[in-house]
Amino acid sequence: MLTKKTLIMLSTLTLVTTCVAFSTPTTEAAAKDTYSQRIETKAETRPTLRKGSHSSYVKDLQQSLKDVKYNTSVDGIFGTQTQNVVKEFQTDHSLSPDGIVGPLTWAALDENKVERKQFPVSTAITFGKKELGDNIVFSTDDRLRKDNNDKAYYRFVAKNKDWMDQGGSGTIGWYHIYKNGDVIEASN
Image 1 (cartoon, rainbow, N blue to C red):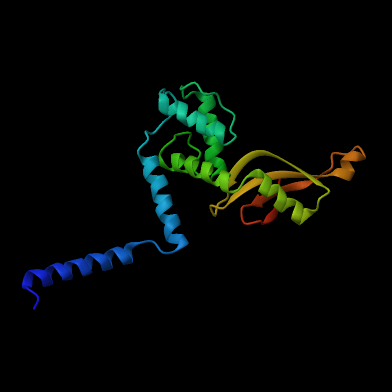
Image 2: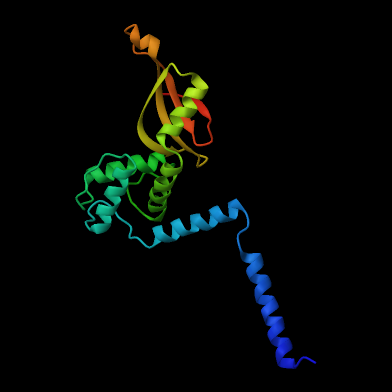
């Protein structure tokens, strides 16, 4: 016969086990949400930076911008050049281009670094050639951007090799090539 103390311990153990089983992410979406929360938490632990700031965090910011193909110096001083590059990055990622680096901008930088590894430029070019043909040359500034729906893409100019060989510019148009393989003609 089980004692009252043993019954209480078994009930508690069953309850804890059930809670743990139901709280574990079991879908890709849940795992992504958990990952996104970690990026946001990391972003929230860093200071807000703006023109006039100078610190190792500014150096980290500048290096991060450089790593994701934005042209800036890495000197630890948040001057006009850094502010302008931050505004470019914010615009390219559908953020308010205020030139102030807060949690949303830090998170976008962190996410961009990860997505660049998952979706390199070479993959985008492969998608473009599959859609437009092997006779096309693609060029880009290598910046991974986000559209208004938070979808990652590279912006390319596509040029026809034959037209270039005949002395022309070869330009056939501008394209956004997305992580999912979509190739969308865009305006210059």
